[in-house]
Image (cartoon, rainbow over all chains, first blue to last red; front, top):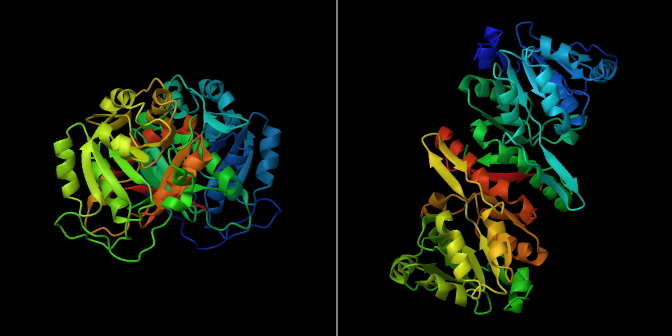
Length: 254
Length: 254
């Protein structure tokens, strides 16, 4: 396995809790809804592939609010630029390959149907990087959501097969996009299960989750135990439907 | 599907939160560690198959403490009687078939390896009853726990296939047996995901969980979404190992 492109990526402190010194400088006209730490030039760039979808845009918004530089990737760079302009922090937009190239950490938030094809096409750009897969392979019918079978076991395991020179971490599956995007929600009170086979990589992604107020990254196991974490999103959808909620999970005694 | 053996089983109030009027009368010599409601003769009898295992004994203990009559079942009735004598509430012990016969609600807490054979042998005894499956089909190696493949999808779905005249509910997968059995632990602070295809049955099992101080029953979806809930126990084992914890889950915004 190749090493990190950037030594900062081996140090969880590089993405650890932001120091709230001064509000970020907006790069678009809309006013920020919360103050954020200044962007540290030494901090990693986070790319979000599928960054115009709700989950991708929501994560991008919260990570940018925390003071990180974020690049939205999309199949359509025009849409990525437009989506970035709607996020008044250090966010830019480009196509998925461009985002994968400039990102130190790369979040994969594309629809499951395009997952395999996209990652196959970006194996070179993603080589040596930490790839954070938050894709949930789910089907939907009139009874709600249910997990789809994945030959490799899970989306994250598929990513690791397709990207042997990347370190794949699975995380952010259960975070409500509605809450991430809601400007009236200051804290997103949920734990984020972070799974992977590389300790430094999971530590770093836990630290990334810790940057978002209310969120906490909790180590959740190795890649072979990702399938049930992705699939559990179907249960949260059932819970949301029954209780009219935006359910998340907290791990107790940790 | 046959109806309930007992109308009380259609009424969640029948197993709802215990009214703490007076301490239970111990039926064995050891002193109870907490006061419990008196046993209501109209309340259902809970049978626990595999009641001499840690999970079964722990659940039996907490349900008996809440004022319910509990019958421990085991392959070896002598061991079941001995285990019941160690629980100073309204707990008795017998063989699995005897427990299945007298139980209104029947908890299945046997090891996964004996699950299919036991349920096949008890289809008649369990006919018309609510069967609460809390079995986790897991394997273990030096890297920890991992989910085993189940032809029917999950232990609970296997139970429903083997027991077509019973109503199978999946619950109590993630509750730490250590905490259930710890006499110094007064409240078991965790949510219990309750899954099933029959609303009255899942309501009743949620009410059963609600009887245990600190616990809360939360509807978690239909039987087809049980596999990931059983498998998630492997992740909790990973978490316990990493954080030296007895991890449980809370559902937020519900």
